[in-house]
Amino acid sequence: MPTRNRERADEALAGIAGVELEPMDLLDAASIDAFAERFLASGRPLHILVNSAGIMMVPLTRDARGYESQFATNHLGHFQLGLRLWPALLRAQGARVVNVSSWGHRHSPIVWDDPNYERRDYDNLGAYGQSKTGNNLFAVEIDARGHGDGIRAFSLHPGSILTSLARNTSVEDLKKIGIVDENGEPVIDPARNMKSVAQGAATTVWCATSPQLDGMGGVYCENCDIAPLVPTPGRSRGGCTARRGDPHVRVEAARRLALFRGPPKRRLGSGTLSTGLTGTTL
Image (spheres, rainbow, N blue to C red):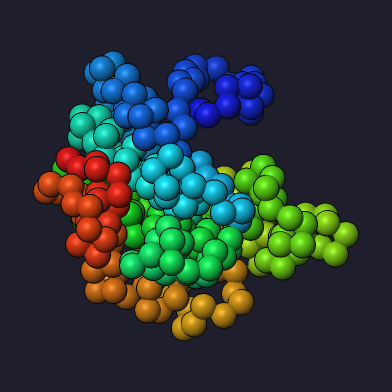
């Protein structure tokens, strides 16, 4: 398992046997490549890749390339990692890639002409939403490109859960999105997708392992099921909006974001945004 912070990883994994930890930072492209190279050198197949690391609603910061940190961490880092590990996914002869997204994807589409907030005012919730839309579209494109080789992909909303993901988010911002109450205490209400950590992990595990999803892919899931379509973004804490759930809309947007065959291109809007920004291709 890759980790940016070995101490926190050791604490989280205490009592779980058979886990190997390797250093990796999703904001550091060189460390992603190094991790992937070490894994590929082992010759092992990769049956399940869960892209779950992320940051949320942080102040405007940029990586060494100048990319906005939420888009760089939550989408571009996982894009680079998934492509670099593609040979190991192929080696499994039946693999699943699971992108942990969020209902927050409805706060923003991909802003094609300025994904890194270079020419518009920064919005920490909008930036988070854009990165989560990236997770969803990347799953669509992985599945489109990989299903013939037995690689299927899914994205999911785990539920609204107060974890260390929100460590850089103010209490006022957490109140605004309903994760904590007026006293700053976590809200647990599974009927509204407000979950505990264990409840939230269930859909990730279901996407990674459930035989109910055999032969399927490229779908957005929640509550251990494929999410329903909802007519408008609204304030609902679940579902996929009808327009973004439309297969034609999703496939075309996914190709524009994450098409990863062919030479890297630097021009935004070229149809290979993620490849252009990371220089990563198959």
